[in-house]
Length: 179
Image (cartoon, rainbow, N blue to C red; front, side):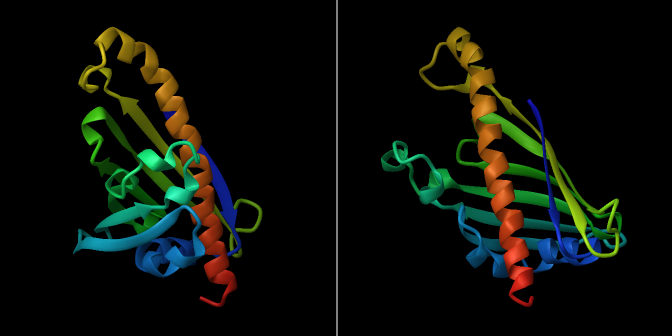
């Protein structure tokens, strides 16, 4: 299932892409859905390209109350493997977690000068695709998992939107605080 989430920030695109690349750990206190982000690996690529792998720790408080007793710290963490192209205002990313055998998820984010206010605002677009692998669900008959996969994909995509908006709002609060 493909998805797209769009938001806007009141900073120039160059500042926004650099903040996402270089200051994300300092933005964590401004987010509600994430408890921690830390860089695991960072490599300089060709030109200004950079590969950054970060471990994210989600907050149980951003999950439905009925699910919280079943969630572990590990189930709320993921690795973000990202290839950044700051001069092109984009990042290509893939997410892996303890449940990665059950799905694949990746995409491209764009940090574009806003069409109406290009020197002052940024349009941020999260684009991606999640695909559930129903044949890999342990203990669930494949025919049943295939029927449930589209609903599960929709559920996960619905979780992406508020979490991404929280990330953008956290970054805006970070900027507003004088960063």
